[in-house]
Amino acid sequence: MNWIYPITIVLYSFSVFGYFLDFLQNNRKVNRMAFWLLSIVWLLQTTFFIIRLFELDRVPLVTPFEGLFFYAWLVVTLSLIINWYFRVDFLVFFTNVIGFSMMTFSLFTPDLEVPQALSELLASELLIIHISMIFLSYSGFTVAFACQLMYVMQHHMLKKKKWGKRLGRFGALSRLDSISYFSVLGAWPLLFIGLILGFVWAYSQLESLPFMDVKVINSLLVLSIYGVYLYLRVVKLIRGYNMALLAIAGFLILLINYFLSGQYSKFHFWY
Image (tube, rainbow, N blue to C red):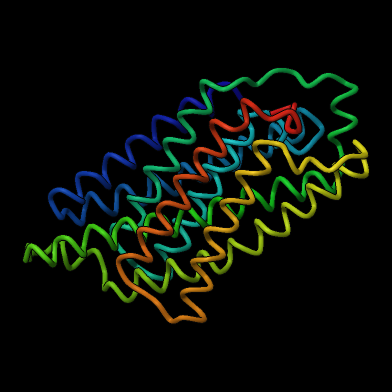
């Protein structure tokens, strides 16, 4: 298993670099090469996950390393699905810049052996579903963030009248807005359900509800921001540039929540 991970990182970097060259030079051949490299990356990631599952005899979602790896795997999976069904050229590139960053960060996160007593506490189907729901929502918000970032970039390009092939490959603003909306629409209830399951697990195992925990507070803040986004989008029928900025702000808070607030969390003691 030791050789799979570094090879996956190298191939992933080549794929992202290929998409970057395509972004700069509008090179379709490089784009296709990058896509097939990304497909190989997904196969290697899946193989790594399955091998680790059997070696550890548990679902590998407990340590920070495993969390970031699972997040990156979900991003690659969603980007391949989106590329297959929607064919928005640059969306795969922007999405996988984030996915590759997460997988690279995982190399510098602890992957310590989980103590037996803690392993028994965490070996709960409820907790595994909670973690899976949270990361599924994160991956959905990642796709939405990539669309919103592309929306903002294309908006500025149109205002400055920078026409060209690159502008056309961003996709229509309405299409980016729709993909972003449906991504948030799918991710928001997953985050909501994941938080509820986390509260249920905490009450059943720790006999307390961690409402004042830093990570929980930030998660509720992220839930609220995207809830406002959906309310304005569905009820007030507001779309456009300012909505994209609102959702981008929500994703940046999500990243702060994942990387920084976990250091001060007393509830997520294993993370």
